Image 1: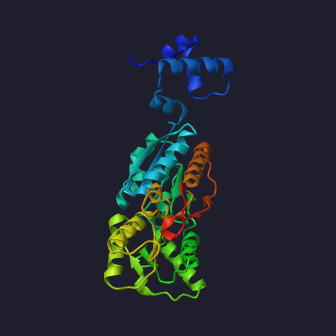
Image 2: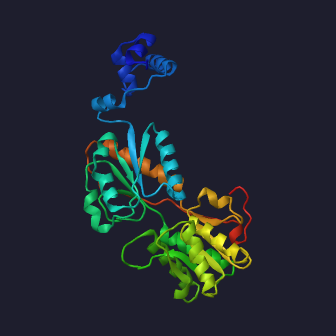
Image 3: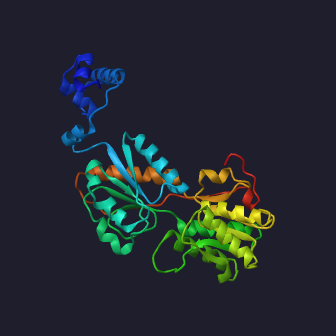
Length: 343
């Protein structure tokens, strides 16, 4: 039999009401009594009924996280960071994968699952600026990423353009001039996105260094995975395009590019330098290790959780939306000529 609140009260020699007050973090409980109840809870392995607790307090102690694809390393690692940040604040997390589908993203911000959580951290992929009204809800919500910049909710973003510019400038500083970019927008300007913002940073870096933009070096890709990175790089090689560096718009494509370059007998970084974006764990262990832009994933997770908790505690009070953008850094590794063990 699972232990009950009655069992905890009996072991701690207190009333059921006192046990409830401790579980719901009521401020008017004497420290000695709170310690006795918590010790009894731990000894019995008692787990509060979150549904019943939610009915009493109006909270469940659980938040939602909706991301496009857990199969993608960046979102898997982001989910891990959000879960750890939430756990440090006493919150559980329910993760939902939207697969980047518009209908599922709309369901995530309006569906019945919201009643089971206190708030939602949401990384949209299909929704855009025209959908801003869909986020105008009294449900606590924090947005991640580059979609819907002018929406009605708090937003944790990245320095996409400036960090992409820094990535290309790093390649230029190492003597590269024929820099291919893989993963760019097929139709730039249609919608603000990670791809369009990073492409802008690429263009700015070339312009600032007096390097002409060569359309043959700008390679779009619908998918940002290993296969797309490898295939896009193979096409550059097969078409005879001259290039001495690759800027991959995420690390997964960058790892695919390393594979294609190795298959073609091109040495990295001697013949071609490669830099990625996101600083996923896998980048440390590729051969050669992949230089990457660290966008501050841990800081993004912490900021998102802190903003969401503030909204949860507002209890219906409406404040102007806020935007937080953590700092980035370049993690220099072997793929651009740097040995950085352990980084």
